[in-house]
Length: 328
Image (cartoon, rainbow, N blue to C red; front, side):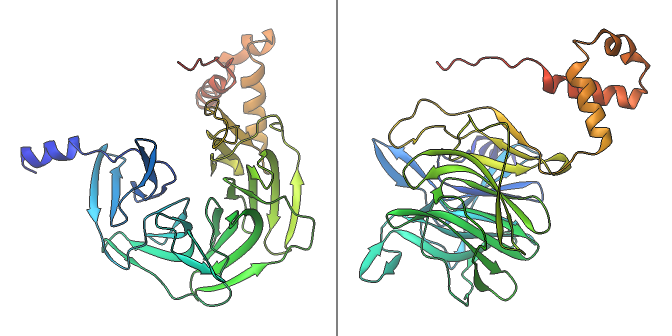
């Protein structure tokens, strides 16, 4: 690479944005869509470009794409599967994406697929009854199936569940056989087993920030609310990722209805235990959590095998007292 091109790559940075979608594939972060604020106006980012961040080199690049490019959108959900990025739904910037009866609405219910090898978009023809156009919904994948949950639909928020078979491109709706969570948007949906999805938080139908957690078994079609230690920590517009030992890690977001009140965003990580921990994890956590307050543990810590000692010492930092952060 000549020096001028290398300098250009190092200086290239994706524009700031919210409401975008992103996936990681082969150590590359692909970022598409969203909007930014310019003089108190929401300006949607170009739909024909995708930004790619190399997680090893720490540099950005941008690709201008061909094919059936989606409209510029915000509030889209995405997933990465078999080397491709799949997106569904979102809010269009011109308000004319879908027609519901005689009303035009800016929400979208299309599926688009991005092929990074070809830098090209395609829009597969789906079958069955597609979900209603929506934005600020949640999505997850189990095997070769994608699941869409809830979101803003017209003037309400829903909690319906739809499944898309990514081989046959056929939609089907999951009709729960149990009581269901309240409708919401800006929530998360995370895969925690071969048949189970975890829903957390969001903004309810009556604009209330939520802190409830639910498990959905897609085979039995049963919702079940779970107990957890974060009932006093409502979250919306956050992220949720699977972690070690089937944990789910929720990070960031807001605890307010951010369109009306915004007292600041959150920076704590909430760890949800989805299944019993292995014995090794239980012992490691117990030692790390109690070593500073237990003289016997402290005196015998050095007797642990080196590999276990390093693991416990690393884990001890997780249980250090949290610091109060002041926003300035």
